[in-house]
Length: 220
Length: 352
Image 1 (tube, rainbow over the protein chains, first blue to last red):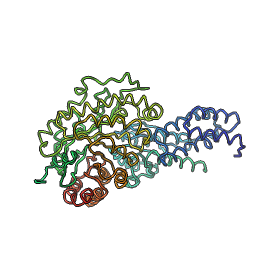
Image 2: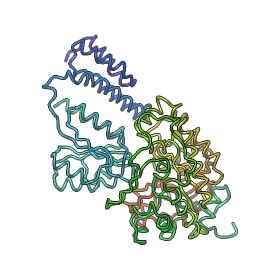
Image 3: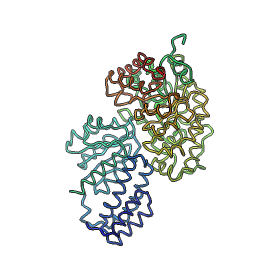
Image 4: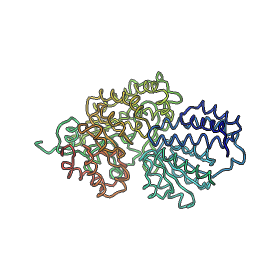
């Protein structure tokens, strides 16, 4: 897509608005983008998403922390609310289905909500089971929807151990389903030991994993 | 040291700045094991509301693997429940789960004026159960081992009472509002710390696990967390330890200045760096991995981790967080035995 300088400026405003968690300036830039006839999809992928990628980078650098990520996400949503109704029908094709939730015993859902946001933006159909989700519920829902992917989150050591049972049950019944696990106490070793396909160490890595998936999708 | 120290003497002498023969091996978090609970014929879910069962289960860690303390309760909901939240003990779930808050007390924008600390706080919820369990433990093994309890720090408690994502945004956008609420919750921590002391605890661990730098910036830590921790430690007149999990190296200087008898950290804290930051004087406890090491690995791995921990500069070998109950007794024995056998020799403070 060719971008002229006025368009580029608006895309930068969208990006910077997310980085600076400034909902008002994102709203303004989103309206400008529509006035300039920038495709809504381009405004999202070349404006809002790079802003969120930068927020993720700043989190990794420990410049930003969870409040800043949440407020960046708020700004991104503010832009999406305006841009989404203008996405062309042919751009709306569903990329895949994901089931996600926080395992039973754990009520910490911030990381999961951020991952959910990224998947939704990328065009996935997300079945969000919420938090404190019983193990059987994940298995049931995966079988019911035949989703391509299952994302499990736990924020405490005391709850992550439930994941291995879910992974085993889902893999036994549906080996094709890709399973990604994440949350502060989870490690790559544990992911491998428990038979998960992917791993995201914490909110930061979950965000990066989600972004990687989105970016690879753009090249499909 | 004219005589062999009992575990209790070792723990308390160290916390009170007196000399000890070696670092103790204990913690200020949950340390009950499935092995201990099974031996008594109990289920984890039924321990939380029954003082006798709670005390009996807590005593098994000393009895089974020589842990030098006994700690109650086993969950993080006591304070929030006393303030009106509802707990879920997962009575119907077969595998072991820690209770959580299923109904928060604060909905929407929190109003400091609307948050009242009940006059009869110590009679609310399960506070009497925990206090009674402390009395029973004291009578059972209190002469030999140190009896401990833990309380949530104010921001962690507020996180139990309202939605965390809302709280985190508020910490950033309206720190003054958050501070005025935390001021009130500080009273809860102090009141319960005093109440548990009357029941017989030797030490208390203040757990501010919501304040890890994985989540909040050192700047917010200074502005919103520290003022309340200062007040808490100034108001508690017996040994009190500050524990924060997650990455804490960037705030460890603040932690060390909070006024606690000691600070406790988990494996994400690089203790060598911590010593560079805060020097050799403050007591630092930690920092064994509670799941991957104690549950999944073998006794020789545990021994190595204990030695590394001592070598890095800890003064007492603590688990970084609650010991996951399915940890094997062999591993836990290896932990305690390694400290017994090599503690004096490997203790950095002793080596100078």
